[in-house]
Image (cartoon, rainbow, N blue to C red; front, side, top):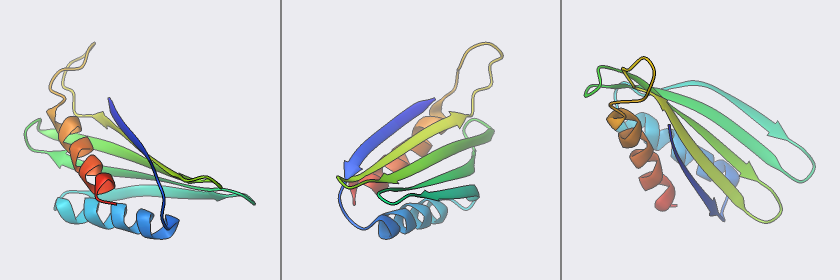
Length: 110
């Protein structure tokens, strides 16, 4: 499992849309598996789970994206999972690292 987090300023909806659109357009096998949204008086949160096929690993990997907005800023987090082929420990995490690298590139462009 790999993780990337960053605090941003900007428009919550635009950041959410850009992340989703760029992930889905970067790979023909990428899908948005599900999402959920939460809102309170002072904050809101979106959680989106993406999945894509990793040709190198011959399996699917997932990326869970959390976008949280409060009064101070927007925090974006991406955590990858899957892709390993070992029974008791993780090997061949290239698919996860590549998926997270794409997420990091998108977030760093915001």
